[in-house]
Length: 239
Image (cartoon, rainbow, N blue to C red; front, side):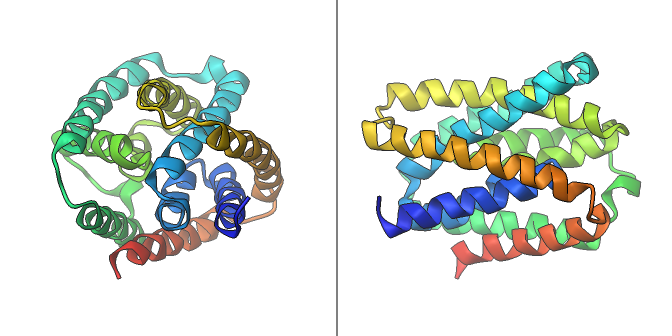
């Protein structure tokens, strides 16, 4: 295992601790750095399966709290964006330019979170639905649609467990589709499977550490730190 792959696993460990504390942002924090460390063909399938594992655990624990109406609505609109993302991926674009654009979008989302109290901001319904579609596009391209989709979820859910369980079930559906396409594309070779297995162990450990820390930390303050990290993570791809 190379030094880049070891650093990649450390990134997964640290960002999944944040995921367990905040309920989102794990993959989107990990992806920009991971793309630089191991490349798109390794980062995307490994982070995708690690996300499925964490989401499956949340759904198993909180399945009674799933809002089925919101699940189907969110999956519909995010699914539209998901399909658009696959169409965009077929366009012969310069990968470096696409990465910089992705980093810029992540940074702008972080600025919005840092400067706006979204939970108490009046957002038009059409704009909320648009965040689902654009979140689906980002998720399809880089497994990173969470921050946009959470804007919609923040306006819909008041209960934290309902929020996490409903979102997690949606991620399982979409990430499973992505996993199937990645399998067909031949991204899963024996070496990637070894990284996946290691990432599973790392993710489980970081999840339980994060859950313990969540009881000791002020969530509001930690979220602000997360937004700053999100901004730095995005900017790292732009500069």
